[in-house]
Length: 200
Image (cartoon, rainbow, N blue to C red; front, side, top):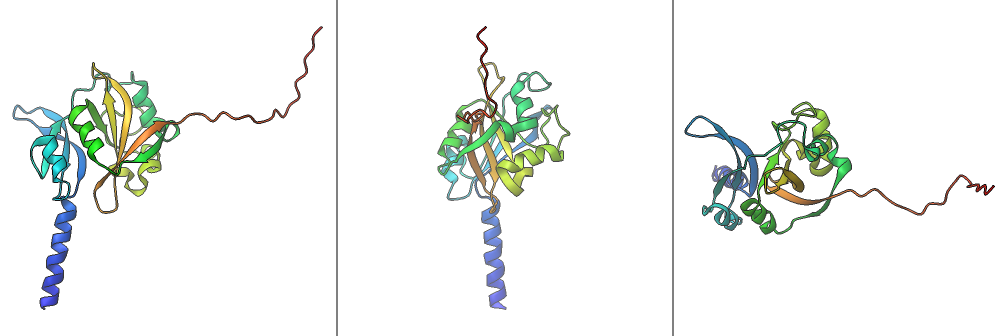
Protein backbone atom coordinates (compact mmCIF):
# COMPACT_ATOMS: atom_id res chain seq x y z
CA UNK A 1 0.00 0.00 0.00
CA UNK A 2 2.81 2.41 0.89
CA UNK A 3 4.45 1.61 -2.46
CA UNK A 4 1.30 2.55 -4.34
CA UNK A 5 0.93 5.80 -2.44
CA UNK A 6 4.58 6.62 -3.16
CA UNK A 7 4.14 5.89 -6.88
CA UNK A 8 0.96 7.98 -6.96
CA UNK A 9 2.63 10.96 -5.25
CA UNK A 10 5.64 10.79 -7.59
CA UNK A 11 3.34 10.57 -10.63
CA UNK A 12 1.33 13.58 -9.49
CA UNK A 13 4.52 15.58 -8.89
CA UNK A 14 5.92 14.65 -12.29
CA UNK A 15 2.68 15.58 -14.05
CA UNK A 16 2.49 18.87 -12.16
CA UNK A 17 6.09 19.60 -13.08
CA UNK A 18 5.43 18.85 -16.76
CA UNK A 19 2.28 20.92 -16.75
CA UNK A 20 4.18 23.97 -15.52
CA UNK A 21 7.34 23.48 -17.60
CA UNK A 22 8.52 26.24 -19.97
CA UNK A 23 5.63 26.55 -22.40
CA UNK A 24 4.67 29.27 -24.89
CA UNK A 25 1.06 29.42 -26.10
CA UNK A 26 -1.11 31.94 -27.92
CA UNK A 27 -4.76 32.46 -26.96
CA UNK A 28 -7.51 35.04 -26.86
CA UNK A 29 -8.39 36.70 -23.57
CA UNK A 30 -11.60 38.62 -22.86
CA UNK A 31 -11.01 42.12 -21.52
CA UNK A 32 -13.22 43.84 -18.97
CA UNK A 33 -15.00 45.81 -21.73
CA UNK A 34 -15.97 42.59 -23.52
CA UNK A 35 -13.41 42.81 -26.35
CA UNK A 36 -11.05 39.93 -27.02
CA UNK A 37 -7.32 40.48 -27.30
CA UNK A 38 -4.69 38.01 -28.52
CA UNK A 39 -2.10 37.22 -25.85
CA UNK A 40 1.09 35.24 -25.61
CA UNK A 41 1.01 33.04 -22.52
CA UNK A 42 4.26 31.76 -21.05
CA UNK A 43 4.33 29.20 -18.23
CA UNK A 44 7.54 28.47 -16.33
CA UNK A 45 8.64 25.78 -13.90
CA UNK A 46 11.25 26.26 -11.18
CA UNK A 47 14.15 25.68 -13.58
CA UNK A 48 12.86 28.25 -16.08
CA UNK A 49 11.35 30.76 -13.62
CA UNK A 50 13.94 33.42 -14.50
CA UNK A 51 12.44 33.65 -18.01
CA UNK A 52 8.94 34.46 -16.73
CA UNK A 53 10.47 36.78 -14.16
CA UNK A 54 12.28 38.78 -16.84
CA UNK A 55 9.19 38.86 -19.09
CA UNK A 56 6.53 39.83 -16.53
CA UNK A 57 8.11 39.96 -13.07
CA UNK A 58 6.27 36.75 -12.19
CA UNK A 59 8.24 33.51 -11.74
CA UNK A 60 5.51 31.08 -12.86
CA UNK A 61 3.22 32.62 -15.48
CA UNK A 62 3.12 35.49 -17.90
CA UNK A 63 0.58 37.01 -20.26
CA UNK A 64 1.62 39.61 -22.83
CA UNK A 65 -0.84 41.17 -25.32
CA UNK A 66 0.23 40.77 -28.93
CA UNK A 67 0.14 44.00 -30.94
CA UNK A 68 -2.32 44.76 -33.70
CA UNK A 69 -1.11 43.22 -36.96
CA UNK A 70 -1.67 45.58 -39.89
CA UNK A 71 -2.59 43.94 -43.20
CA UNK A 72 -2.70 40.49 -41.60
CA UNK A 73 -6.46 40.21 -42.00
CA UNK A 74 -6.81 39.74 -45.74
CA UNK A 75 -4.64 38.66 -48.63
CA UNK A 76 -2.30 41.65 -48.96
CA UNK A 77 0.70 40.15 -47.12
CA UNK A 78 2.96 38.06 -49.39
CA UNK A 79 4.76 36.78 -46.27
CA UNK A 80 1.58 35.37 -44.71
CA UNK A 81 0.58 33.82 -48.03
CA UNK A 82 3.96 32.10 -48.14
CA UNK A 83 3.69 30.90 -44.53
CA UNK A 84 0.18 29.48 -44.85
CA UNK A 85 0.63 27.84 -48.26
CA UNK A 86 4.24 26.78 -48.75
CA UNK A 87 6.26 27.33 -45.59
CA UNK A 88 8.20 24.08 -46.04
CA UNK A 89 9.30 25.14 -49.54
CA UNK A 90 10.27 28.65 -48.44
CA UNK A 91 11.95 28.08 -45.05
CA UNK A 92 14.23 25.60 -43.32
CA UNK A 93 15.38 25.25 -39.73
CA UNK A 94 18.82 26.74 -39.24
CA UNK A 95 19.26 25.68 -35.61
CA UNK A 96 17.49 24.80 -32.39
CA UNK A 97 17.93 27.36 -29.63
CA UNK A 98 19.56 25.55 -26.73
CA UNK A 99 19.51 28.72 -24.66
CA UNK A 100 15.97 30.08 -24.39
CA UNK A 101 17.27 33.54 -23.51
CA UNK A 102 17.21 34.65 -27.17
CA UNK A 103 13.54 33.64 -27.47
CA UNK A 104 12.70 35.36 -24.16
CA UNK A 105 14.40 38.56 -25.41
CA UNK A 106 12.38 38.33 -28.62
CA UNK A 107 9.09 37.82 -26.72
CA UNK A 108 9.89 40.68 -24.37
CA UNK A 109 11.28 43.30 -26.74
CA UNK A 110 10.02 42.74 -30.30
CA UNK A 111 6.68 43.41 -31.95
CA UNK A 112 5.37 40.06 -33.17
CA UNK A 113 2.35 37.83 -33.66
CA UNK A 114 2.15 34.10 -33.08
CA UNK A 115 0.34 32.13 -35.78
CA UNK A 116 -1.10 28.66 -35.22
CA UNK A 117 -3.17 26.21 -37.27
CA UNK A 118 -6.39 28.02 -36.33
CA UNK A 119 -5.11 31.53 -36.98
CA UNK A 120 -7.73 34.09 -38.00
CA UNK A 121 -5.14 35.47 -40.44
CA UNK A 122 -5.20 32.33 -42.58
CA UNK A 123 -7.13 33.41 -45.67
CA UNK A 124 -5.34 30.90 -47.90
CA UNK A 125 -6.09 27.38 -46.70
CA UNK A 126 -8.95 25.86 -44.64
CA UNK A 127 -8.46 26.83 -40.98
CA UNK A 128 -7.09 23.82 -39.11
CA UNK A 129 -6.92 21.95 -42.41
CA UNK A 130 -4.65 19.06 -43.23
CA UNK A 131 -2.68 20.96 -45.91
CA UNK A 132 -1.29 23.51 -43.43
CA UNK A 133 -0.74 20.87 -40.72
CA UNK A 134 1.29 18.82 -43.21
CA UNK A 135 3.43 21.87 -43.97
CA UNK A 136 4.09 22.34 -40.24
CA UNK A 137 5.05 18.66 -39.83
CA UNK A 138 8.26 19.51 -41.68
CA UNK A 139 9.26 21.57 -38.64
CA UNK A 140 7.45 20.03 -35.66
CA UNK A 141 6.73 16.42 -36.66
CA UNK A 142 3.85 14.89 -34.67
CA UNK A 143 3.48 18.11 -32.64
CA UNK A 144 2.50 20.09 -35.76
CA UNK A 145 -0.98 20.85 -34.42
CA UNK A 146 0.55 22.82 -31.52
CA UNK A 147 3.18 24.62 -33.63
CA UNK A 148 3.49 28.40 -33.44
CA UNK A 149 5.08 30.68 -36.03
CA UNK A 150 6.66 33.78 -34.47
CA UNK A 151 6.34 36.52 -37.09
CA UNK A 152 8.19 39.77 -36.46
CA UNK A 153 6.35 43.00 -37.29
CA UNK A 154 7.92 46.15 -38.70
CA UNK A 155 7.63 49.66 -37.26
CA UNK A 156 4.09 50.08 -38.64
CA UNK A 157 3.03 46.61 -37.41
CA UNK A 158 3.08 44.81 -40.77
CA UNK A 159 4.47 41.25 -41.07
CA UNK A 160 8.17 41.50 -41.81
CA UNK A 161 9.88 38.14 -41.22
CA UNK A 162 9.41 34.67 -39.81
CA UNK A 163 11.77 34.62 -36.83
CA UNK A 164 11.09 31.33 -35.02
CA UNK A 165 9.07 28.15 -35.24
CA UNK A 166 7.97 26.97 -31.79
CA UNK A 167 7.22 23.28 -31.33
CA UNK A 168 6.06 21.34 -28.29
CA UNK A 169 8.57 18.59 -27.49
CA UNK A 170 7.83 15.12 -26.14
CA UNK A 171 7.77 16.32 -22.50
CA UNK A 172 5.34 19.17 -23.19
CA UNK A 173 7.82 22.04 -23.23
CA UNK A 174 8.37 24.58 -25.99
CA UNK A 175 11.38 24.04 -28.21
CA UNK A 176 12.30 26.97 -30.43
CA UNK A 177 13.97 26.87 -33.81
CA UNK A 178 15.56 29.67 -35.79
CA UNK A 179 14.62 29.55 -39.45
CA UNK A 180 16.24 30.74 -42.65
CA UNK A 181 14.85 31.21 -46.15
CA UNK A 182 15.56 28.36 -48.51
CA UNK A 183 17.90 29.40 -51.32
CA UNK A 184 17.43 27.70 -54.68
CA UNK A 185 20.42 25.52 -55.47
CA UNK A 186 22.81 26.85 -58.07
CA UNK A 187 25.21 24.33 -59.48
CA UNK A 188 27.67 23.92 -62.31
CA UNK A 189 26.07 20.94 -64.00
CA UNK A 190 27.24 20.33 -67.56
CA UNK A 191 24.76 21.12 -70.32
CA UNK A 192 23.17 18.06 -71.87
CA UNK A 193 22.20 19.76 -75.14
CA UNK A 194 24.94 21.03 -77.43
CA UNK A 195 25.06 24.76 -78.13
CA UNK A 196 25.44 25.70 -81.76
CA UNK A 197 26.54 29.24 -82.58
CA UNK A 198 25.80 30.44 -86.08
CA UNK A 199 27.82 33.58 -86.80
CA UNK A 200 26.49 34.31 -90.32
